[in-house]
Length: 207
Image 1 (cartoon, rainbow, N blue to C red):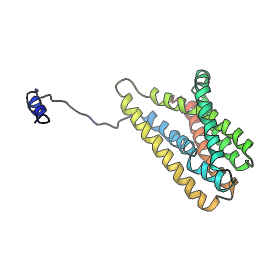
Image 2: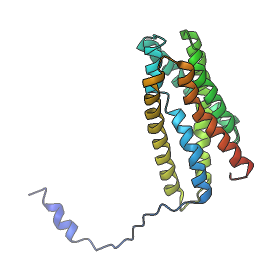
Image 3: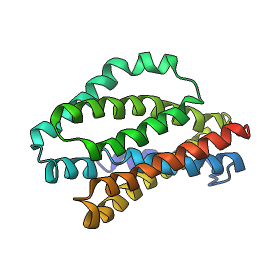
Image 4: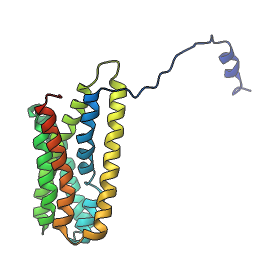
């Protein structure tokens, strides 16, 4: 009986009519921004399945060693993200993507744990530059009324980028897992493409 009691309270509440609008309308400039963003997160999504699989299967690291590499990533972000965040400027996303591309291509040259650790430092540096700038640039395309919609679409694009990047790298690994130059060369092109598009957008003053 106690659980039924709230029903009588609900019946006594006045009807409130609200209008719910669902709109995906965004600016042309924001849609253009989503293209390099997609490639950005295709590369950022590599710090997972492809990264782990390559180091364990090819370089023969233990899962513990790979775990240490991920720990380096986390510790650097926790200690340096605020410092890096105060120094970076919007155009630095171009440099960040170049660092990302070079760092992921350098995985093909890694032969020991020390080299892998150093490479992880540069991957993390790129992440600390690109991640906050990408979000800040996405917010710059919206006002207070459209910010929720803009960030929602941005989040969808980043998620699709990560999933697509992981899927493509998994496909590449079926043929190039033991040909690291070809494998990581192909993966690093995501960063090169993204960097070039960002550069063109800055050149044409889209930001």
